Structure formats: structure tokens, C-alpha cells
Length: 146
Image (tube, rainbow, N blue to C red; front, side, top):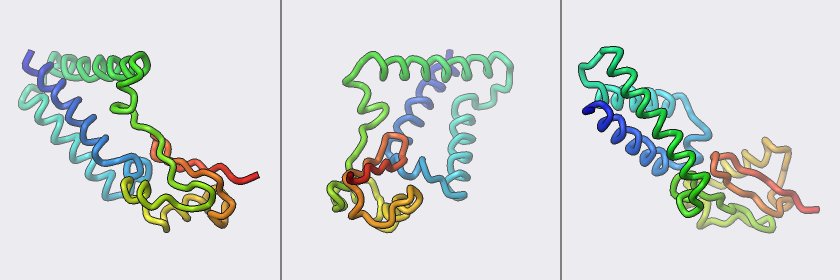
């Protein structure tokens, strides 16, 4: 039972950390970020299982994480007021060709990163953009003017 409680705590800790880190960072992992994620995974695993290397411990910890993943996903799907807390909300970062500095700063996106994302979508200038939205996945969607 101890492993189930620790796995539950670890699950919500990781959920909290990923919400704090932000969407952009998770969508554009650099090698250092990937190494940090692996380190966090190892540290969480040590905290969950401690010295229990048994198959029972594996099943309890893995099953707890799997059940919580399904429960949180279902809760996000069925309970609308939980969705922004679990999944986040899209954020408008460009409107009518003008960057919204407050939203860019809140999500730690530089103008250079925004312009690079636009170029990757084949957009040479923000003047051509009606809306740019930072999606909950961390990707920036661009809607060009007609």
C-alpha cells in the first residue's frame, strides 16, 4: 500500500511540475531538457519504489500510474472546469499582425522564437498573420489574413 501512496504522490508531483515548466519548453525539448526529464524520472522512480525491486512493486507502481493517467484524462474530458487546470488553455500571442507582449512574456517566448515558428510555417512576416495561438501542446498555430 505504501508504494501506491508514493506513486500517487509522484504522479501529481510530475503533473504539477509539467504545468509549472510550461508548454513551450515541453514542446521544444533541447538535449539538456531531455536529460533533465530523464533525471526527474529516475528520481521519481527511486522515491516511489525505494528499495523494492519486486514484480509486485512494479505492478503496484505501474498500475497506479496507469489508473491515475486514465482517471485524470477522463476527468479532463467529463468535467469542463478541470480542463484548464489539467490541459491548460490556448493563448493568443499575435493579433492582427501585432505580437501580444504580455502573453509572450507570461509564456517565456521571445519575439525571435515567435518569428522562427512563423518561418517554419512558411510565413515571412507577422504582418501576414491575423492570429497566432500558443496551443496546449506547446505548438504555435498561425492563421494568415485572407
